[in-house]
Figure 1 (cartoon, rainbow, N blue to C red):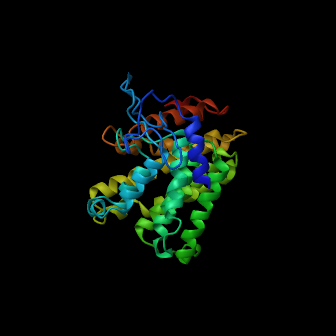
Figure 2: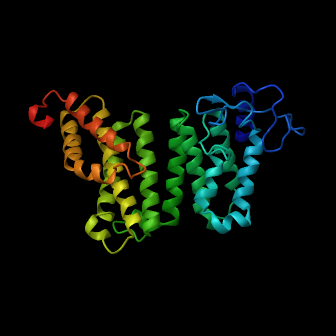
Figure 3: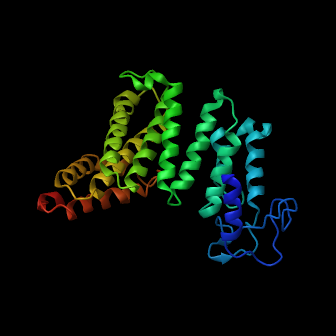
Length: 309
């Protein structure tokens, strides 16, 4: 019902559809069985490099859903594409490669969840991936409380299938540990957007502590490939940046938290420049790093000239 509702909402709310346009998937203007109309403006197809691309990227929401469903079940695609790659068709346009946005993004999130709701309990990883995608689509469109509820349900599934997570010494795989910390980061970011700042900071601290334990450089040598080691170093630095951003943006402003953020940023500045450099896909985070350091000084009434060095 939710998916059908959002599909109807999209058909009414999406931008202008050129006269005579047809769905690029089924080549029809209207779905005969349901009367569903076309949507447009949900990706980058309509405006490529500032040039109007006309009817490019016009489609039915139901056709976008069916296209993603076929890709998930297609045996040929399974032979070369990972589950994560196939999942991207639920959130990205097949023509331009850009992520969906607005009501189409929400509709695709609900459809993805519905398509995987009936999966067997053994496929809880796939079901949870669908839940995380739905939560992300809601969060990016301002439905933060709904997103938080879904993230919480996803975390409950993880804990149910991995009870050792609730102990002091969890026995889990490296991939699961990464997945759990990514989920906890999403929860922390959503809490921050809901104004529950102290809860968000507490979760960011736990995530950072976990990554510092798992991704310490002396423990990565000879264990991980250079590419995996690079990814781990990036993840740890991004967690530091997340924590510092939360400390700086906390209201009311706390001098102690501003100094903590500044100390963390300064202590890891050289690593950030090295790891998040031009060759990293996260190179823009290096600018956020320096920007946060400047903000930690600007908002701190007790900052002095030594902090500028």
